[in-house]
Image (cartoon, rainbow over all chains, first blue to last red):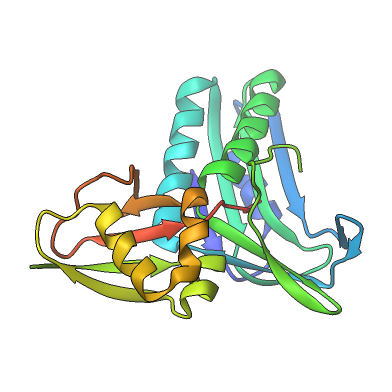
Length: 142
Length: 82
């Protein structure tokens, strides 16, 4: 299991290697990537802030809950903090399991739950200012 | 008298003009009492409180939860990781 926050670029191949074990016939990954627009406005960069100790606890219990709920072998979950440029991965999830269905479902569950429960916030920067993204009501679709 | 450290994040840190603050009160003390002190100092916090979640020592709690001396309290605005 890998659960980390980092200010460095996420090493995706390391996460895949971690969950790609001989007994696993499926590895599913999700990358959350910095998009160049939000609600029709051009985004120039993002800044992620975390309540680090609590975020890591929440991420850990999320991964443990996922392994309990689905027949998955192992999970790697890494989220960036600090400043990110367009196209960079802000979060990467890798799930390894014997068969594909569990890996797909677990990966989806982790990103959806992370977005509503883990204390991490993003600030969107535009040419003429910036704004904290604080969804109300909470959205699980973007 | 007990004292707690209150952490502010994202828009709440902007509103409070700080990342953290120590609040001291006579027992018994709940999260709501701590929030009332903060609103007394920064009234702009009040309209945001309905959208804020609370944590004590890294665990989500309700607004009527008791706090103890030395606790780390956090005001958590709607999250947007991912």
